[in-house]
Length: 141
Image 1 (cartoon, rainbow, N blue to C red):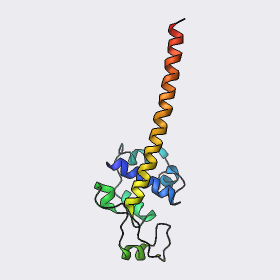
Image 2 (image 1 turned 30 degrees about the vertical axis):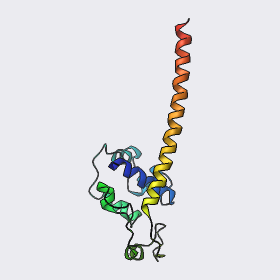
Image 3 (image 1 turned 120 degrees about the horizontal axis):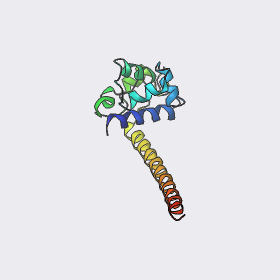
Image 4 (image 1 turned 90 degrees about the vertical axis):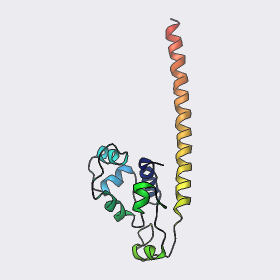
């Protein structure tokens, strides 16, 4: 899994947890007024600002920076001390003692992404078939 995939998983997770309403909303929370600029950073098409990871951690304190950078470990730090110190993923600063199994979260998100990809591929196949029919009609005239 490359860094772009990890960013997509993280963005989807933040949206699913209600920490951001959309990718655009997340960009706004991170200080991006230009939706395209944020998209370029998470798609590795623009340089990542030096404080980018710390801004992400301000939204999701248990974020494992090593996972985000190179895929080492799980997406979320799972130590009870970290949960107590930073609160749960819903920004409950009291900390509820939950330990988050990010492997399960990642598997679920990857499954959702695969289902969406299949849906998009089917839609593209339908469009391609329509284009072929239109081209054959034009060629027969």
